[in-house]
Length: 429
Image (tube, rainbow, N blue to C red; front, side):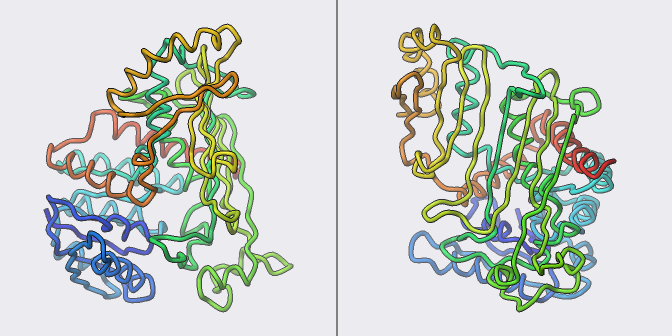
């Protein structure tokens, strides 16, 4: 298969090329407008080609022009197109790529508002008619503690049944904390100025929450098909900004001042107001869930983006923490719901661990008071960047097989309904 990369404005596009794929031709066709974002993407790919350990061997053929989208459609040089960049035109890019008969692997979010959701639904219908696959890059499904949280939740002897919860006490809670300043492939990330414009990047409610809503569906209803019109109810949503100072903005973008398109978001004291934070309270079938995303400027020393997650069962809760006590490494805990369950757990866990180790060899548990910590060999902690290659490999397998799992498309539609409906609700719609 031949790969095309369309308008790679986000570093996620390059991360998909951090590894080679047996089914992909090493010559990659790139369509974009000339500029610093294209240059940064090519620089990252070249760093993978020239690294000392396990270098890649991509050959980049670049067609840089203002009319790159029309040329991309007319040339049709690939079988699979990667779309990861400015989200303002993403729905259009997806629609045009599908109409051209190409499989699409798109970065999240594939829809950042209501009109984008409507376009996405049409693109899925068009993809089905044309026999091509449309898929988003859900890297968090490959994070080991999340996979183990899902695995333990399928063991009723330990977890019991997933509680229904309530708006005041959700059965599932997921919180993700991110930072504008971070390292990517060992180097400080350079953010494009549009990343801070919610009209181009999208708000926090429709960006990172895409991952969290996806995980709620994937863990609570594995391989089940969801109908958003019947199974999803968004109950409440809110949004709030993160302030970015002019000095911080210059460090992140290497630009001396805020561009004109951001002046609408500059507060009187001179800081940029970025609506990157959001919270959604909603129900999937009879399960109440809450997801929350937070963005700050810079992580505490030695840390990075963090994830917190709770699944509450009738016998135990499965909790992922990633704080200082865990050395900033995501760690899964089993917390018995009652003292009686805690007393039974030593007799229940050996059989449960045989079940878990059938898929995740050498995983173990240790008791810490009245809870158990899941011990994961370091080899499973491959890092966030490696998950992009895992997603791509999975998608390419689906392309080879000719179909996605039957539940994937309706559940993607349910996911983007949830996030875009939450955004409308937070704006008073």
